[in-house]
Image 1 (cartoon, rainbow, N blue to C red):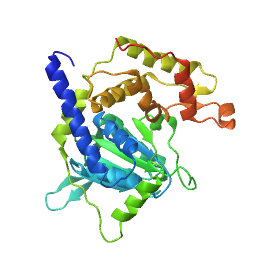
Image 2: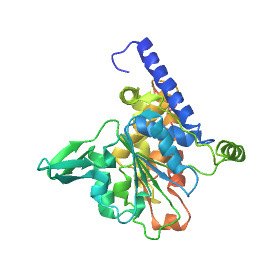
Image 3: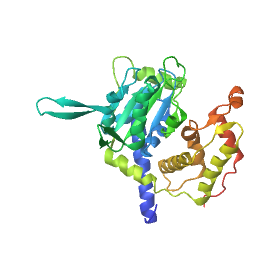
Image 4: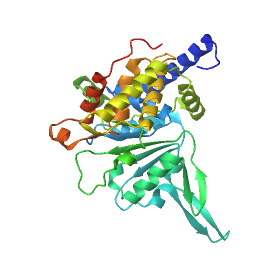
Length: 325
């Protein structure tokens, strides 16, 4: 971290680690047996990004989003996307006030700090575009008036990967607005038993906030100060270039994706109590950060290759630095 003594650097990393564990422990009161998914969701928030959770129904996608939002003392909004949802339902609308004889803006759910969008692929492309524009610009415009969104601002979207009838899949250019795409998966047997014990149908588990908006913003600022050695930057660039040369991949890793990969690796290093990035940080977050940003060739898809397996092949082909410098 720049212009800080070693003691200050270590103290900042330790404070980050403690807050990170405090929030994840709070979420784990609701979501049992999924520490990786919880950790990635929190890393996404602390990197000032947006999260897409893609998995089958009933594994806790909505519960993860709600419990993460409840762990931070900020306004929370929720939108259930359906084909008839309009952009004004998401952004807000100007309403004529007869008494004051003026138009009054009534904000939509986007004017919350953490916004849960259930089943994003069920809304029309026009509504999806309105949401994704706000995600990218951190502002919305209605009737020539631009209104900034609150900080921190995070959209957590969910979608079901097995039901495509009546849906509008997000194109690659819009998927790229999400910092990460993750799944949750089924719990193991022990975790499933814990879920049955905790959720007996009569008692709802409510989690309270354990962090403030200012604390989250301070953690986000700390992420950008984590040291990344030049050799690791060259490693990230080498991985991106290797993906563009690989025959099984028709759309490789973009420069924006490399920036996102570096930032998430920095946050993961802090979560481990370090103020410097190591190659394992990069590899650990590569699939959720990059998996939805590459496109496979038709031949690779016919052979059953997945973006995750293609990324693993790319990383295997690039020499890992033996020293972080």
